[in-house]
Length: 385
Image 1 (cartoon, rainbow, N blue to C red):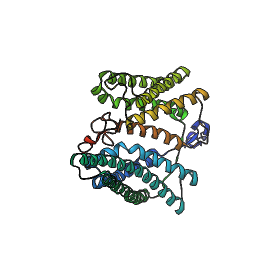
Image 2: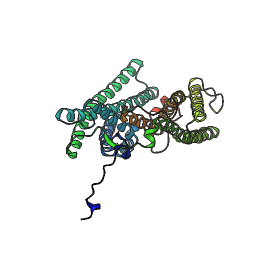
Image 3: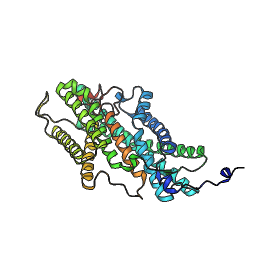
Image 4: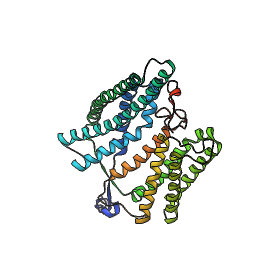
């Protein structure tokens, strides 16, 4: 045997292998659980809507279930990552033992149930709004019911919706507990709250810059989703939103490639200008266009875009104070970064879902510009943007 084959290979220094960092187990835990919980929880949401919801929103329940499960998947991702962050803080990267394992199961199930319960509440309140409009329309057309009678019917409708939310939350929580426990059993071991890996990626080195770029892209995509409805109203408004989309995408690329002072100031000023324009349009109305001087209602799409733009302004100010190359603290949990990035994606998807694009109207058109009145309530869902 040669001396070369007998020589023992020198161990590689830890510095040469790169530092070990903690990361969120996206592919092994977060995404599978989020998909499973989204499909299960949105099933109950659609079932309850079909049972007690407004008639305008009860058609094609299977398609609604699939569409909303996909659209709301980022919300469940945020819920799962938040639950794992708590588990990691309480029991470490890999909770072991009966108590920590059961505790992690309960945390994940409870976080998903709270997210689904919030979605169910919003859906039920929208159903109540549509049912109330239908009641008013029926009374105006057919009479036979005074104001006290109408108020009693509306109160009864609201009570039914709130009871559905309570029953639905109980069903969702029980389902989530069973599904998470089943997933843990299939894994044959505890759910890792965090994983270890060597080295750091560019996104880990500049998480704030990545978040800012995603905020700008997200706001631009929401504006792109409302282009068709604005083109129907006024061609200049549609062109304006196309320009906004291109400007925000260019700003995001500039921030990501060269996050200097000029890029940050440009992103901040652009986002702030859009916020001011939105506030004026909702408060007193714009001075131009076919509906000049008429305030527009707040909708899901424009509300999500506004939140993204406000976050972009605040983050630009923070980066201008600290510098874009500032590194996160060594002890900071990677879950916080994951929650922020997944939350931006969730707001973007919700904003697009609030538009009137075919097939993505998350709450049946709550991002459109057509006003809802008593005459429309019995025939269509209407819109609030």
